[in-house]
Structures are given as structure tokens and as C-alpha cells.
Length: 91
Image (cartoon, rainbow, N blue to C red; front, side, top):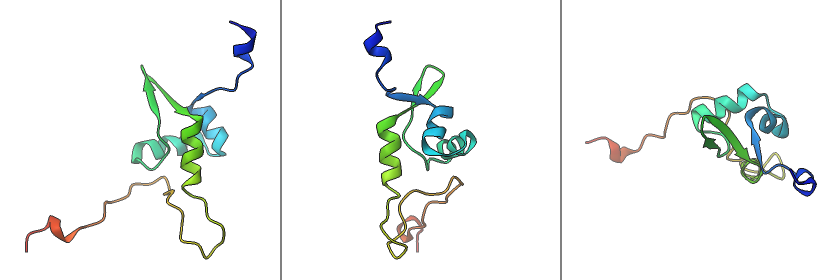
């Protein structure tokens, strides 16, 4: 491998490294993946990888500037039910 490539920061992280990058446990990141509440990920063969840019974009969705700001859009790692819409049910 060329030495200049070895000096580059990684563009993709596996689950464990992505979780460390976000200061989460790997299990929490796996739950986010299962429930669809986490950052975008890619499947390369049987491996799950996260782009660093996607991790940063996901954290930016939760950015607020004060406690009076509306809650960010990063949801907790749990099952969420879709909102009920009146148009889905006949009258």
C-alpha cells in the first residue's frame, strides 16, 4: 500500500468504529439501523459501513441552540409508529 494512502482519514467506518465516533455503543447504533432512526449506512457484501459524512449529517439533524428550540429530528433508538392520517381510514 502506498504510504500517502495510509495517511488519509477513513471515509467509511464499520459499526463499532462509527459508534465510537458518535460516542454511542455499537448496540445502540445497531438498534438505530433496525428501527430506521439512525444514520444512512451501506451494505458492502455482508458488511455494514457508515460514511463519515453521513454520520456528521445525522448528528447535524439534532442540532439546537437552546433548550427552548424545537427538538432536533434525531429520534431515540426505539420502534416508532407512523403518524395516523385521516385519509388512510374510510369514513
